[in-house]
Image 1 (spheres, helix red, strand yellow):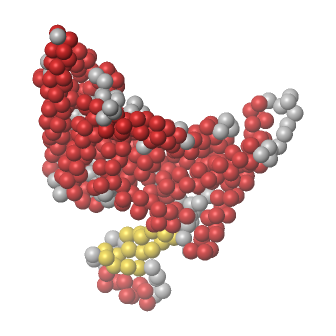
Image 2: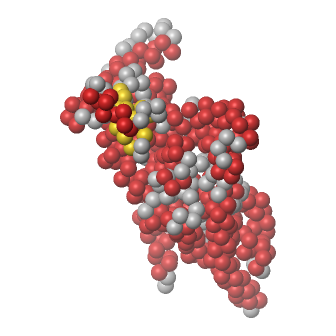
Image 3: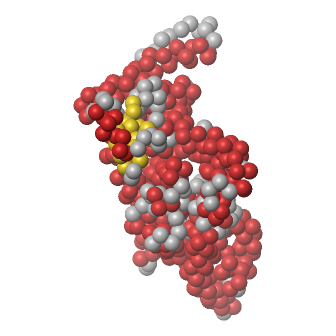
Length: 474
């Protein structure tokens, strides 16, 4: 007679997993995932620049005061890092717009380079080229404001004893539109306008040239009419938004889509649900984080980059808006890889009596230190192994809850710096939070918790082995 677990496994394999595989292979979602992956060198360079300035400027200023000798000596290095930040994080939405258009067109077997360029141009067409900003007037005292207004000067305001003026800057683009804040606009308009471009090419609404024309020239002419239509569509939608609401698309998307989604993403139960689903997919042999990449990369990565932008602007950890970001998963719940299997490896090495498990753990340990755990997932195996089903689901959920608790309590800051995912346990959290020691200790605490949760099941595996050996002896 089949057990309840067997029935559950059969239902998951025949009903649930085919649906998730279709979702995971959906072309638009794959393009979003690959778009974020493609810009990782850019985000990594900007994150490294911020991290270096934490140690060259921010921490020394905290320890020894502004203008200390060490920071002064590092001025040129600090400026180099600022330049790198401006060339990476400040234009991240533009990089993503091109990458998204490229991968989407590639998925439809349409010229990807032209598609990336069209996507980029369409996103830029949504931007306000005359942004308003507050210009600080440090030499003007608050007492002089009334006299200046009487003389006809407008746009003056006083806040905390400082005078500023509202200024319109023509022929400029605010970095608020091109950086992490503009990612959702890049995603939405990049998808829509790339699809317009793709569908028009598939409909053969193109300029046809003789076969004797070089392929590069022919490709450019094929893309011409679809590209023009797609970019004009973006410009027309932008103007409709401005006329109807008085706001540009980025403002509307940020207010009604981006902020609510990012706010929900840091919710306690939302994070735990994402962790649970990722582990559930993995248990059936499907890479959970890949299936959920449109969520983890499309929502949690912008949250991380927005935290990074806020830190760079304010240098105040209390101002970071999002409690849980893409790097939080790696920092606190994926030490050794998905399922925090580094804790399992330690439990096996010290308490397992099974030679097969100990051999696999010894082979997997060096890679587990650097968060690579396919050898133990498929070698033990954990995939489709009912013995490890409960801890596999439980460990990431519990450790995420612990890390969230410490973050919401203000004991550790949110993750705001992107670091390489192969960074060993503790070091990832330390660097991802700008050198916070408590964050590293929480990561080590989670490793200990994972060990405690995994241990009873390792001991249970010992007993299962003993029963099997006893049965064979009879």
